[in-house]
Image (tube, rainbow, N blue to C red):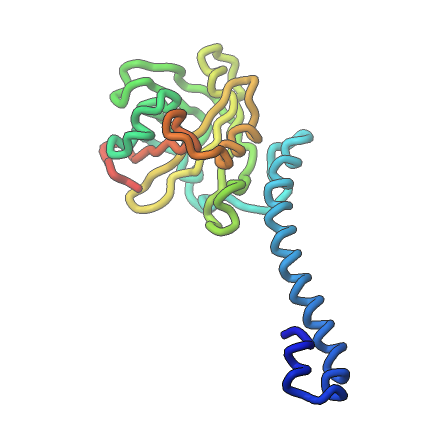
Length: 216
């Protein structure tokens, strides 16, 4: 409470006595505000800085929400959720993705798996990073990052893969990817894109476990 308000209710001598305490409280209050603001700035900044160097792991110490799940849940067949038109009709989204023990990914144009884009692409796990828009408000909004290690030309379009690994009930996931000229940073920053229905941005694909729909 500002000293002037206290002065209206107490004697001047009493106000002078309380002034140092009020000043200290004000500094603590302002410090807390600055700390929260600084944390949000550092969250985004740390994500960007984490990609400068040999590792894609975030400078923030975050762990995948699926850290204790076998293969981090990245195992099995997932197809586009047909109940979400923005995701279903986004040409960037493969109709079907097959994950094998978080090491081999296959991508198909159709949901039945009859029209392959790239199959058995090999990946290595590169760590977990927070979403620059939703984290820390949503503590589980963390992306798992995978980088291509095989040299099949068909897989190059999926050089970088970012997953909001399988979660929720019914189980579902979100996928972004980029070719060799892209980067993990670019994929993450898509969360900050201005909403644009024509461009289907921000990019939020939605995949359900095979055979399930309306999973989010």
